[in-house]
Image (tube, rainbow, N blue to C red):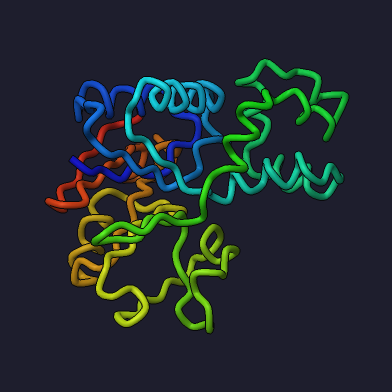
Length: 234
């Protein structure tokens, strides 16, 4: 089984139920997560710990870099007020609280230094995309309007305007998240694109805030089946 998982945003309990109880993953399965493990939801640290633990246990779990991983990396590497404020505007407070780092309330940007080195190193190791035999796994999308689309990393984590190139992709699917949409629309959109592009961010962290959202979605890369469960974290 090869499964892609949408944006998690600190929803640890939901992720665990999806993988262990719903999908019943085994070490022989391949799990690809489209980024945005952290921020906004309550258990960012626990999500990262869980993924690292699964990898250490021999599970095949790969993650691409999302814009929220990029935000924490930028804040850590260049500890300016601008980087810190941008991260805070995008849900950093929940992440710092999940690490029990209350000093951010008076320390400001230097509080990022209390994030475990192992986690920072993990974020920095994440690729911007993964190419498989039938698909590309990326956080936001790929800009095929530029000369070298696979080097345009900013678009891969921030893009809301998507494009597709049969030539550049060699007919492979683009599997991404980043822009939350209701489950029904995610399924409908996949069909409308001719099964060449699928958005699996179904707004897990937005439970009770947007109709049709509040679900974590997994997508079978071989059977094209969607698996969705409602947020279990709040």
